Length: 120
Image (cartoon, rainbow, N blue to C red):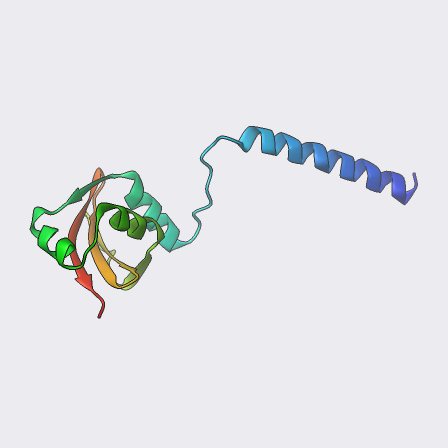
């Protein structure tokens, strides 16, 4: 069998496989969260979020609304040096986003925002 025929069969099968993958994976919420930062943020964002009532004044002073807070919990950077990841019960993470840092306690059922501080 000539090389051009083998290449044609290979490309034909490859394209059919791509079409099947596109068909099966379309509409599904698939994501690739391989890095530790992405895994922590995905884990926190899938849980019910509790905002500590004591930090409402901090949020108002920094002019942070719920949409900004949600975006920070999805696109922020986890600072593992400031986080407490060795705890047995609820791990505590520091998430930096734009001009502020969020201190989150990530438990098994829910995530609680403990404090919000300005980075400046």
